[in-house]
Image 1 (spheres, rainbow, N blue to C red):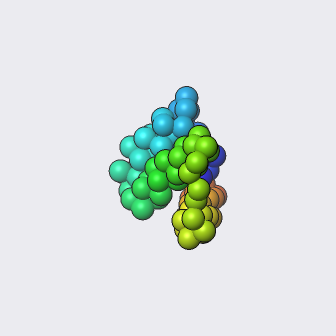
Image 2: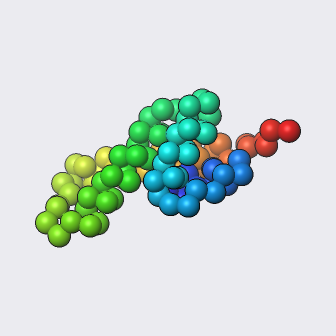
Amino acid sequence: MFHAARAALTKIGVNPKNHEGTVSEFGRRLVVPGLFPREMGRNLAESKAARETYEYSATAEIKREEADALLRDAEEFVKQVKNKLRNFKPAD
């Protein structure tokens, strides 16, 4: 999701320096104006939080249901970004 979000931002000339910037800029520049649904911004933020929780914790364990939901969200996110980028026309 992170790389798909960065690809979408790159298309509009935005190059965030980190994960947090990618999440916030995706929301501000692509979700708020209505280019992508709010749900995508929310899913991107939630996936970032989950990744940080499970990657940096020695004791946290992800439940199968949560992992499946994150995977479904990621697949849908990437699909929507790919579709939008395929038909993207930069503003003049």
